[in-house]
Length: 212
Image (cartoon, rainbow, N blue to C red):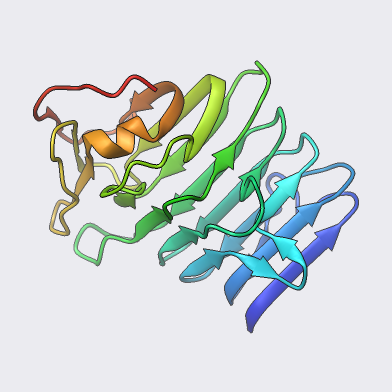
């Protein structure tokens, strides 16, 4: 258990299929030469600045950060890019164990930036039953996949995915994952919404105007 956790390695922090299990409040991580960053947090986690490291970064290595049962927040640090993986992929997941429980939230704060570059397959995947992608304030490039893909999807099957217009998140049984027009406008990249494997409902409200 650590309030503030810094993970710094030249060759990766954890590995695909072998994430580092944490129980921290605030995390910063860096793979400075090769490898990726793979974290599985037990409850809520804030990605922020710790011990001279800002957010999470790799040199073209995948980033995969998830919570088992807790909110996941990306803070606006002093870095230009707060979660950045070069030409690799980024996956951020806020886990909610059951529809009957509280829908855990994935938050990317206004002014923060989650970014990948290049043209490789994949891009940025955000998964949660509740998301706040700077939903009340325009924040250009908040999620920046360039020419690649951004996937927004619910964590649990059966969740209603509701987007465009003034769509709101709602905690319930089932939950509603709302992605409003402001949030869509904060995304750069080809955007896919909803999990193709989900059995939940899919709704469009209002006019879709985002062009990111």
